[in-house]
Amino acid sequence: MLKDRSRLQQERQQIRRRRRQSAWITFDGEATDRECWVADVSQGGAKITGVAAEVGSQFDITLVPHAPKRRCEVVWRHGRTLGIKFLG
Figure 1 (spheres, rainbow, N blue to C red):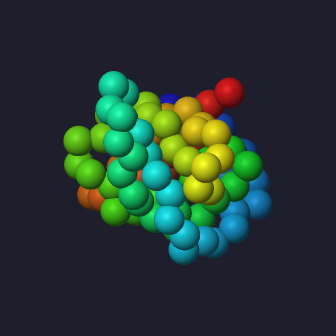
Figure 2 (figure 1 turned 90 degrees about the vertical axis):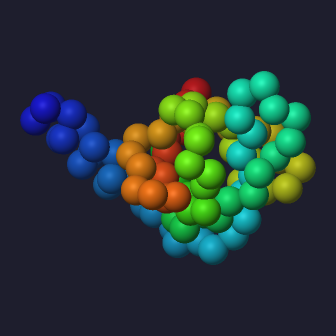
């Protein structure tokens, strides 16, 4: 457990930029994007809010309209707020 905690602390050292912008998530097998909000973002991940409760552990997110989708994984959850890390 201590090893995981130090890894998270290292990842948290990345510069986070506060945002209040729309983003769009796509769940596996769905053709429709659902809107959410980006609270902050870093090179390795983001905090997003306004997410539907049924979000799985991985999904695609688009941070800018018409940009390519990025695969991400949920690192933590607190109600409708998620901490995500970008994969690949």
